Length: 284
Length: 314
Image (cartoon, rainbow over all chains, first blue to last red; front, side):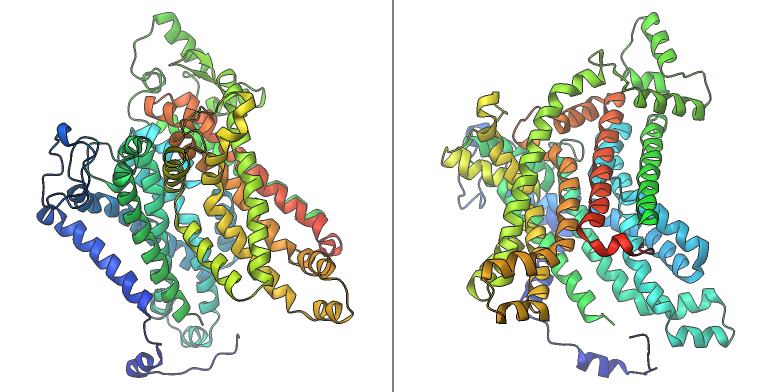
């Protein structure tokens, strides 16, 4: 496994080698593209004002005018789902960008420098693993008050140890490869080798890890909103809708909770599937 | 072995020390002055303010304050809720019972059902395996709040088999906690089942198992003594990690089923910004999480005789 021959492969050859994408890959990609489009265009596409209440039509079943029916206050569920995409996906995105950028740099440094720095990083990540992300997020919500700020900061930090642990092992493996040693012998600076050669080679794993992380972050964000500590009602947000729909569940009208929950599960399944596909294809 | 245990002990205390420091610092990260945060912005009589200041040693340097807070924890003094004007320790006592019952129930479900499903899927190929794999894939993807609402909708509201909210009296506790425990265990159960399946399958293909089968040993003996015993290590790990993480998720499930447990108390305290209570419970959760994980690591030594003789094992 450690013996590695130096092969130069044209991008065309790499493309030919790649197996054909399966149906599930296409479905996953479609779900993600759909989610992103909703997050951008949701307010334009929504058929109704998502905050327009109509108590007389509370819990009304789906109709031609309201395709997914109406919630406990008579608001149009479809419009709220469409608007909710934005806040449900931006929070996780910020968390992923934050955790991944710090995690990647630290993992790279640990793999490159080795020695005491690496041991130190490993020890700190081991210790940080003892702090469940949700608990940290609740603590942050108590400190900064309910809203998006606290949970975003908390989850951003909470995911760093996981990122470091996963990426560090790939980078250590990559660092030991012959081409890196060759560049070192040739006298290239460490920074140049890392930035120009090592990082681009592990980049697919970074992307895969970021994709998986997005799924975790989305589930945790919705949990925080469900607890009432994240996005606040009456804002349209999938996690908030799962929570506000709870009254409907107990009364036998579960549409609001279930549709919002289905959106979360669909996006999470899609990113998980794609993330796993990316890492499978790039396994060395 | 001594080295291994020492390492685990070091990790255990290191984690507790650092997390207690983070939890303690949280109070000082809050915008505004600590005393105002402790009272949640309420105005208290001057003598109460003075008592708070003394209790939290606010006129001493930061590190000293942290150490005296830590010392208080060791003596069982978890702080005082300003909002309920009660000691946190006494507030926790009866809520802890519900949460421990819930988590214990869920741990039993995820261990028994998870391992059973995993063993069946691992030993039997074909339809049973495919069904279990599909089912666990679905379970793993459903977040606890959705599992809770689905169960509520179908079994409590729709079929009326189980009560929807509350923990009930001691006599009906079991039936009241059944749906919450299933919701809590669901996604971890799926992971336990999958790890068990892979581990069993890898073990079943090994030579010593084929030898045992060809010697004509009864199937149950082969499964229990030759397959399961060797496949146990990864299973124990995943059951341990899954159980440890149940406590953090319990807050969500308690909220969904209106259970009056520690998780619900943590959320209420966070909403009310009752920081002393949040600190105590957050630390309690971390403590439980780390303890279970350490326990699993120590359990290895007893499960795997090789660890007892090997000097180097990190």
